[in-house]
Amino acid sequence: MKLPEMPARPKLPEGLKKLPQALGKLAEGLKKLPRALEKPRGALARLAGRAAAAAGRAQDGAEVLLRRAGDVYERAAERLKTLAGGRLPFLYRSTDAPEIRETAHRRIHRHRMVLHVLDSQHTLSGILTYWAIALIIGVPLLVSTVYTPSYLVEVNGVSAGVVKSKADFETLVEQVERTAGRILGQEYTFDGAITYTRALSRPEDFSSTQDIKASLMGQIGEVMMCYLLTVDGTVVGVSDREEDLQALLDELTAPYETENTVESGFVQQVSITYDYIPVDVEQDLEATRATLQSDSEGEATYTVVAGDTYGGIAYQHNMSLTELMDLNPEASLERLMPGDVLVVKQAVPYLSVWTTDRVTYTEAIECPVEEVEDDTMYEGTSKVLVQGEEGESLVTADVSYVNGQERSRTVVDTQTLREPTTTTMAVGTKERPRTMPTGTYIWPISGRINSYFGYRTIFGGRSYHSGLDIDGYHGQTIVASDGGKVTYAGWKSGYGYIVIISHGSGVQTYYAHCSSLLVSAGAEVYQGQAIARVGSTGRSTGDHCHFEIRINGTAVNPLSYLP
Image (cartoon, rainbow, N blue to C red; front, side, top):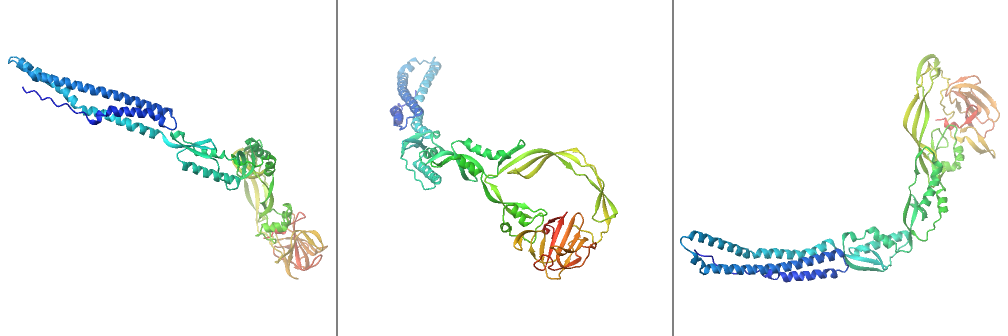
């Protein structure tokens, strides 16, 4: 039997031979790593120490493995030499051939396994080499992942924060300069002494933008932090105490709040903030109170009601007639009707308070009406045959006010307490005669108005004018403004020749300063019927028709009723 040849002793890779030395250098370098860092970090120092210890242990283990590998190889080589040197043939007999041959093969196979292991030293060196490279590359990589190059910034010797770059900090300085300039009302340059120190920092160590700005603003002696009260973006008061400013606002809302108030606030945008202001701003709460409680002149609207005049509306709102007409360029002195909306001057509080009250009250429910035709009554007339009884409901509503004046009402719940009963009403179907009042009025003549209803200056003095003076020519026809019965036709002091017509329900119309009369007392006239002619009799300065409307004996402004 031919024995296998003894393989040459395997050569160790050059990298593996140098591994212990490299690991030793790595260990020394890692020991020096904490001192190399400009800013001591406990966690990094411990990490470097552990890595150095691991490298040291790897160095010792590598040296032991190399020695053991050499010893094993030498013993295996000697054993094979012994087998090949004659012991096997000496023991070989024909009768023992199978057993001897089997034993020899087993021994040779075992030693071949040893050589195979030794021949696999490249795998071992690869493992050791892998761990060495992992330590050499991994530790710096770990450091660069956990820690980032940074700058520790100080201003005038006081820490201002940690930033990634000088440019980042310089950008924040520029922003602070603009903020300070806006507060101070002039250009501002930050002149603090800034120093930068290189460092390695964890992500959580970096300072926020807000913190750095606050630190820089704190270095500006010309500004300070204070509570600011603003109205529509304008600062109206400052104080060191927020509660002082809130107390001023509470003084304004208190008069409008009741036990039913569920919400309140201001029409304007009002806020209290904590912000920077110039240090020389005076904190005067009394001046702030005076500003908040002051009034300004503003515009409001007024809805015309029956009997109003332009002069009376102007007087009521402390205005001249000229001012009123200037605010209402589309209005005409020749016409004023109930429901017209005029712009008037009105004192407006600096701060207007709105409130919402939840109120509960009872409200009448109107009676349903059943109509019964009656041919004995004129069309447009009616009378109650059976008066029903109103019902009653319990209403819950949210009422909105501005400065105590109701602006809107929203019903949120209604409960019927009592149902109403029906009212029976007779309505006329008989054709109306032409002379019956219509309830509407037309102009007695066509012409411009020389003098309006209300106070005026005439004949060298100020007097009250109870009607309209409508310009006309001598002999122009005057017509009845509405149908009715002539109650007077003749001469009346101051009026000259005059016709008075009754239209029922206490309403009368006057037509004065006539040159001649076309009707007499007791006559029934219809709307538009000729009743007199224009003249200048009585207390008059020229041809015109003086026209009045009186209700229950009181003169009202005809413009409120004429089309």
